[in-house]
View: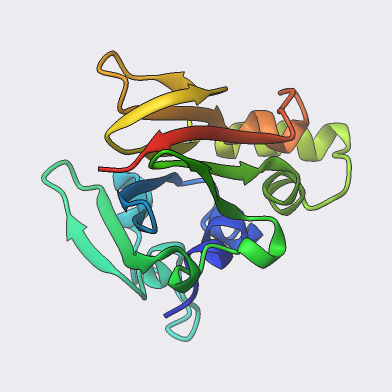
Length: 198
C-alpha cells in the first residue's frame, strides 16, 4: 500500500484527477503512543461517471485510477468515496514524519502535540512554480470548490491553531485547493493541536 503521506502530498492526488476530488485527512489518537489515520477522497459524480468511457481503451481516466488502493464506496448521488486507513504506534504509521509530514511529540500528562508542516503540502500541490495568467484561470475552473481538510482528534484538544469543535475534541482546518495553487492563502508554518489521548 502506498503511504498515506505520499498520497496526501503527491501532486497526482489533485492534479492527475483533474480537480474532481475533495481530500480529508483525519488523525485520531487512540492512546498516548498510537493513532488511527484515515484518508478520505471523494470524487464528484460527473467525473466518476466517465469511468471507462475514453476512446482509447489503453488510456485510463481519472475514475479508472481512483481508489486503486483502499475501500471504494459508490454513493447514491453518483459520486464515489475512497477510504484508506492505517492504525498503530506512532512510529509504525507512515505519515511522512521524515519528510516533514505529520508528527507526534509527547507533551506530558497524557498529551501529544500532533502537527503537519504546510510547506511540503503547498509545494507539492502548487508544483513549486508560479502560475501564469492562463494556467491560473484554467486551474480555477478545474479546482473551484475542491477542498483539503485536516483533522486531529482525541479525548480533548488543549491548544491548537485550527478550528476547534464545540465539544473540544476535534481540531479541523479546511483549505480550498485553488487557494493553495494560486498562493492566495497565507498558511502558518504548521497546523497543530495538543491532544489528550483517550
